[in-house]
Image 1 (spheres, rainbow, N blue to C red):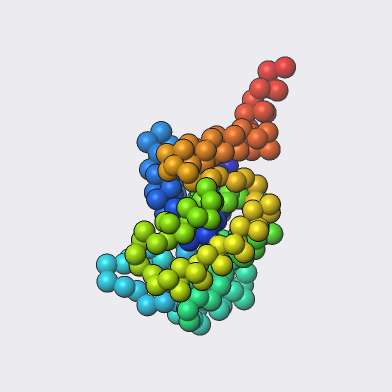
Image 2: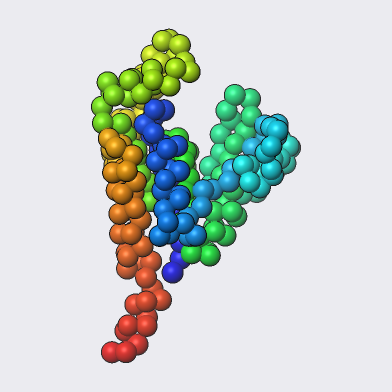
Length: 203
């Protein structure tokens, strides 16, 4: 059975990092789940390894990859390029892996145009709760939080373009909902060609 490509998007403060950590470490399916590794032109930080946190490339190398259509999506962020390498994703899926991409809405729409992907929007239970979570992190000024809230409002308007909505009211419930989506998607007849062939061969 071929693998799945799962895209997770959502506003800052929705809890993507916490939810994804638990989804990736699901004890019943851990070996089949991987987070996609992006290519970046930013400098490697202490402790980072090429191919683990990121694939580190020069700007010239990155732009060559753009020219040869090697990315499912890419963007420039704060002076550095980031991109999702097509070969990594397709290779992992060919091995039957479920590959996760945690990317923004623009990137998600780029990927969806180029390949078959299951898109999930992870949302907070409400805007007040989102603001409470952002304030609770104590990492940003009130002005920065206001900017985050304005950006989140715009992002939430794209929910209808995603296949699924998962509300992160409690982490364990959000993880269970994503696991249910994965189970259902694996049972789509379009992804069960080998099993169907075996069954129909006995008719």
